[in-house]
Image 1: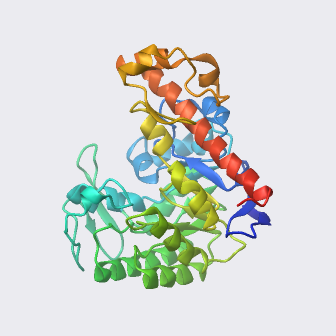
Image 2: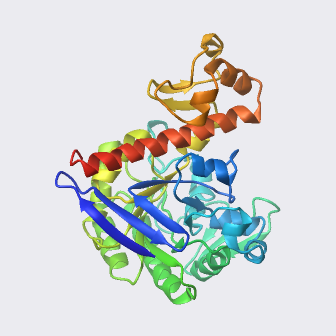
Image 3: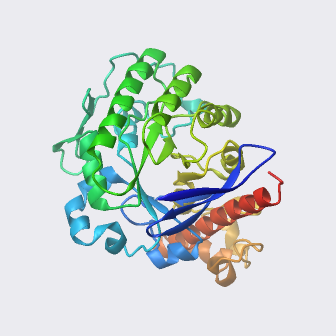
Length: 380
């Protein structure tokens, strides 16, 4: 992997660059759409390319469960398995430590804590989730498929990711829950840092390995983690965990980390990418970021447009014989109308989800493309 910075903003920490991998070049900053099970839900790989997507991220934990990394490896790695010819990332399974653990226990669906989730519960030092067990060496899960016990640690995560074969892989970490107190996060950070070293030793492939910075909402811990991970021989860096209770706070937290990371290596923000987040996180110095928002919302009938968010399940759109977004040039907006998409969504037709997914990804990628142009012009 080769990363080169082409231009640095004089107004912020934003930068233009390119990330060169065996499977192609990614212009940065860049959105990384999520292909959890080696697919962007409802789209085939050719369609994903047509949405201007440059790189995808697949999920190590879920691909380990099904079909299993051995099957993917025999098929010729993820690239042949899913017929994707562009760059790929795989996460480490660290997010599932949160989502299948305290995330389930407390009903926490986001790493940015929402108002309705502030129940006053605090996860204290040595606390354990109900359905998984986190120990010094890794995490004991129960398979969501058949209930079998399975262990995932840094060595196991790296071995799985090597068989999956993505250009960029991530170190195994614990994504700490938003309700964790200072002492819990300190203990968690010790494990994440230990696992980072184990991942580096375990990797045998030529894949680029990114270390992950944690530390939750605590400035001292974020800076400590950034310095520690930056001091190891990683090819790039992920910024993980939760990012406070508001957007401005998130920007500050990202900057704490970015200021401690080597300038010449790429920075990836894990699991953040609402439209309103993008300019903020790019100005903070982030190069790539993954997010399920465009695809997740699409399957629930929500389109992101120049008019704002539209819920195509609402009956009022039966009366709208007009493009989804008059300012968008994607195939959906050029060929289909709101009334038809509304019909598909209300009828529960998969094609409706497909059309909205295509449009949303195209819209998000175009949005980031425009931010890249603003950096080129010195406007950001």
